Image: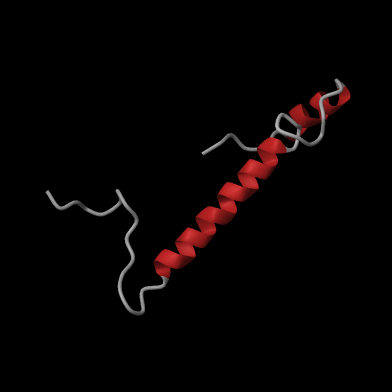
Length: 65
């Protein structure tokens, strides 16, 4: 997972003239962190729903071999 958003560094970057938005913008790490957290929460919720069949995530079972 990515590093936590660093507010102090973001403020320094803004003060030095770095763009707020865009591919290399100051907010890109925060947007990435929020997106990853939302996707992880959605996946966790989906995997907990085991009414019909248990769900498994690839690579996390106790193994077949």
